Length: 352
Image 1 (cartoon, rainbow, N blue to C red):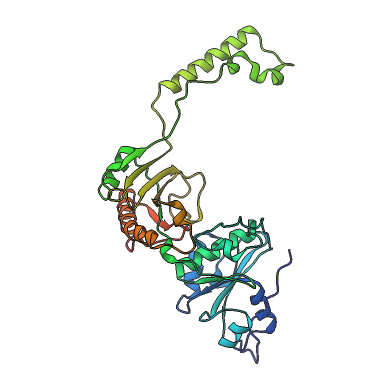
Image 2 (cartoon, helix red, strand yellow; image 1 turned 120 degrees about the vertical axis):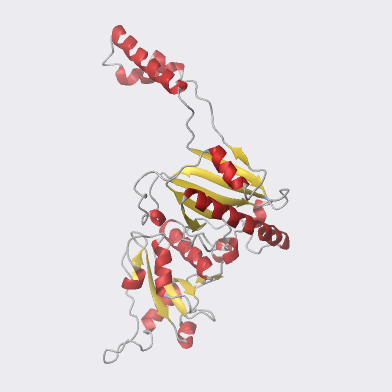
């Protein structure tokens, strides 16, 4: 995909403070735009992006690559006349442009609703792959900085920052289920451990009979003595594993808010499968680390996904937010962890 040429501001005698070129305004009109308050500087936006895309520096370079065919460009500071020409609604005057291929799925199902309004903004087909990832990044940035996303040539998505209730704590320290339950119970009484697993009684009998590998070994059969030796070694290993302590690599603790009328708080625990961009600055990021997800479970999940929240949902959320924050604070202290919001952006642990 060829890169779009962005002309920027006209230059007169080395002065680049003139009006934006008509070509640039036309590009802004057709591209997806992140719109931010004038009080949000490029350094803040660049810092947030680095939590998701560690390579590159938006503040230094004026653009950052998001994928093979996509990049975020800006900021573009617009005069009121330029905002009109670029189809940027009032009162927004600072924009970042997403350059990406247009990649769409099928139209959303009739009646489908989502809290950020993707079905509303893309009725002819939801964005996916690079365009979808880029749009989701813009929306999550807009939620964090109280901004908006102007879809290319179309609707305005203005996510509610208060909808981001959950937090994620990452730490090099693993808390055993009973210990974590005790920690969380300080802020959330009646917490219980939820562990799902299955007992393992050894391999299927076909593995011992040779049926599972008969085709692969038909031209190179083992002697009866060799088979007996291998089976004995395998049996010894299996018995050693079965006799060892149970290994748990993921679990959850769950507790009701009050009597449960405002839902539940769930702390999901698992070992990270790969380093995530938000932890790369930590000195423990190159080894195994633990992810603690502090999630609010709404009494009616369907209400949580509606674009326009109901009074009942707002009441539940108002009761859940301080509990989620309290559990997150105590979990950060207990694990010496670093914390992000549910979209993966860093959060000051002392400001939760």
